[in-house]
Image (cartoon, rainbow, N blue to C red):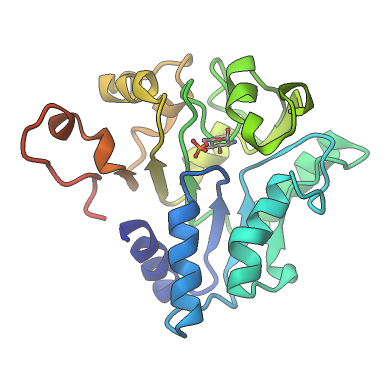
Length: 242
Ligand code: GLP
């Protein structure tokens, strides 16, 4: 799988790379592949440093519905990551602005992000940077749109249980990452993809904030390939030679 090759290549070149990880359905294939390689003894990352992109306010990393717990289930436990190599946002921190500042300091101390792996929300959000987000924003508290909350419902018993607020890395931090790997899959993303393809900076579509990044690789599901959908021979998905 191309996304896994990308991560393996980065860590071969820079074993202590600082990497920001997404949650959601999209990256699960990548995480599964890394876990398989690890199990076969073909991949390990003892020196890598990991950060989560975002977290719900009110959920601690120990809460099974938190993004921290998701990453433990799908990445850190299967890969045997040492907790000392992680910095996860804590949505239960008593002083949230201080938690955000400490998180940004930890990224700075790691020398900045070598790689931000991102998924795409149906309204064009990346991490939890919702439409209208300031492109200069760093880690902060945000209010989630109803659209985004609906998209999260499958992880909670009822829609009303989906937290209304979250902490997220800002668009500035993501733009400052030395490389970005954007993974796109799943239904309901046609409008966000159309905004991307217009290639016009647009604050209403946060995804457009990263399109001018010099080291952006986009890997999309073949099912999203417009040529394939129209029945024409399929072009390779992705950009930037992943
Ligand atoms: C959430 C996360 C995003 C993720 C998005 C897409 O909103 N905060 O980081 O990209 O979900 O999720 P999925 O991959 O399930 O479509």
